[in-house]
Image (cartoon, rainbow, N blue to C red):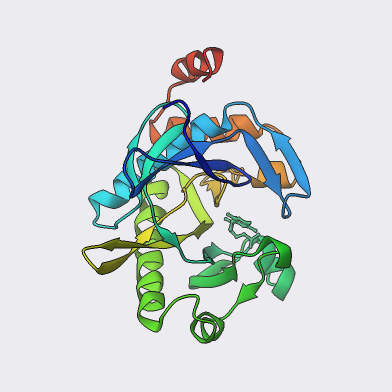
Length: 252
Ligand code: TMP
């Protein structure tokens, strides 16, 4: 996979052209950013952990008939994915009040929501990813009404499935962010889950202690960021401590 052409470099991932015209290679970096790139660091091994964690979750979602862009993991830091036309919206699903919801609306931190809330943010770094309504999405044609309906339905199914899945691992799925894209095949377009699902874009709290096992440890300077990501990987059963050590020693 040498001499690949870089298509796009984001804050935590790089996209390269794939072996087929409708595929891409998604490379997971160790870079962590928060507050729209104002806070930055390297977390050794994060890219490897997120690659494995996202592979597992995308695979489980496929097993319950949720279409994702994931095709296969290529190595420790890369996966082959379907090339999509990314919809410029971040979909946030919340089960427990925290983060920007608490700041914006003054809701009590940790309040269990009577039902999940789905929010939309415009993917636009220059504007700091502002929160938007369904009306904005339709009027400015970021997605059609039927696409939006599908996005909401898929987000809700992902939440139902993952809440139970993480619960079985003694983890509370507090909230998470999803991205979707359009995939064309024979003149037909489908909405497919894109990006990654990992502790970078989920809030995961230990069920008993409420210990944060996600990127909030970095955002809030809580320390032991890598340890928290490893804990999630071990509970999911994707990488053992010794396998991870080997990977880091011979890192690619
Ligand atoms: P928020 O409470 O800061 O709005 O975050 C909601 C969820 O979205 C949380 O699980 C973290 C995730 N998220 C991202 O994946 N990327 C982002 O840029 C932001 C702001 C949040």
